[in-house]
Amino acid sequence: MDEYKITYRSYEEEELPEKYRRLVEAARKASERSYAPYSRFRVGAACLLRDGGIVQGCNQESPVFPAGICAERNALFTACSGYVGQVILAVAVWAAEGDTPAANASPCGICRQTFLDTEERQQAPIEVIFRWNGKYMVFASAKELLPFSFRFNFPK
Ligand code: THU
Picture 1: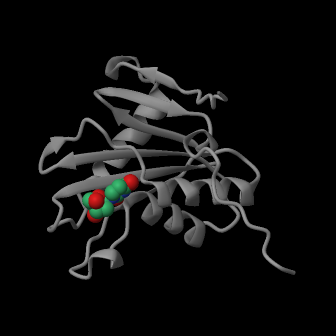
Picture 2 (picture 1 turned 90 degrees about the vertical axis):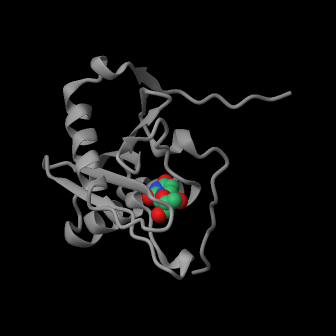
């Protein structure tokens, strides 16, 4: 049997280093602007740019369900379209059910793929930070979160 190893750091709430804490707080603030009348799952994300700037996004739902967007891609694409050429160093995710912080706020598969695509495009890893059962998980690269990810060589 083969194995695939995933590496990450985990921190108790009070141990989380300041640079991540700031980004998580920005994600939490962004979640307050979520529009989630259908799921009531309010998600916020914050991307840290190389120049120190932070770009936020939150989930936006639609009555045509698949037309909505996750917080992570909202933040990522806002960064990619508003700050062209800026490297994205990290993304933090926060989620709340109503007003209660969600124990788990891990990004969905589509968002993982878009972080990975962006990493490859900018040729620099994106750290991913989110809450998992009350702890904070820090992954050094989106790659860690998407084993055997989709790859395709587009025809020239
Ligand atoms: N959602 C996110 O914003 N990020 C994720 O990674 C997973 C799900 C949103 C989509 C939808 O608005 C709500 O959470 C419930 O799925």
